[in-house]
Length: 447
Ligand code: ADP
Image (tube, rainbow, N blue to C red):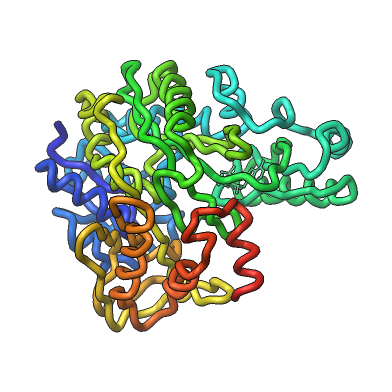
């Protein structure tokens, strides 16, 4: 096992990794920008290294600075968290070239899954069902229009390098194709440096269902059921739950096995998420994320496992601590993402926290790097915390979420907390009867 690991991230996910390391008796090294000198991850780690100015390109995304921090502190492995360098194949390569260990999948798997066209192609070959669409990239507007006619509108044009909801445009008719095609390409180019796009049938009432997978890199892989992340704003998740209210035990077993077998086939190592759209009883693969996801705690809640601990273990060459048979679902878990944003426009709302009080009690987990007097810097993501609740069943989890939100105090800035109070009063949330468009419609009429 490692003696010391470096956490190449900030905020709640850095704390998440530091906590797992500490429980395993592993020393942790935090890295931070000059804007984060007072951040909680710096205080909580055993050591810290300042790696650059506020701009993430010069700090949290600076590969040389992070490698240097490893060499200075003697850290043997790097956990990337999510975002930043977590899905950067080149970073993994550089880490290996320095005889360090990346806590995550291989550079090759990151590369294959990071390009959505190659990912779909690979998954199709592994027997995973995909959204109907173009065979690979679509190079010209003429080709796009021809495909639109052939497949039938609406279609969605997606940048192969896209992520975070960027580089995706819907065309409802031939008339909308030119604009959608050009915009998706331009967004792909400007955000990800790659203008290649592909086309998919646009599903109109699906749920977003994702399967948590975990592999040991030696041909063994398991699945940890699904998460329903259909409640989204601008293709970004805001509320996630497990198990999915619409998924039966048989469906879970079937799609779960397909995913686990595919991961075993490619010798996948560590945590991964295979994302699907689910409509009328069918699953359609859209993409795979080769990292720990923001919403991983709901899976931990119902399975009683520590995914970060497992990531660290398999990276050190140890076996997984569970088999498929060991993994039994217990109860229901829900996560809400708390952002420093002002409703109704979700404008970023950084600033000083005058008072912070985290909820507690049975079945409540608050993953956050906030503290009294902390100043949220304006340079990074607006996620300031995740409130996760666990109950014996869905109604209990919902009641617990309402209770915990009521105890939470975050004063001094605007947050998305009021959104969740309002959502809990909605019948569709109480019954679980929603799809990927429900929240956008609700926001239009209620905010
Ligand atoms: P990103 O990598 O930017 O997160 P994804 O491919 O994971 O993009 O898609 C994000 C969300 O966009 C999905 O959860 C879904 O809401 C919507 N979406 C993506 N593809 C389709 C599709 N073919 N039909 C309908 N909605 C889609």
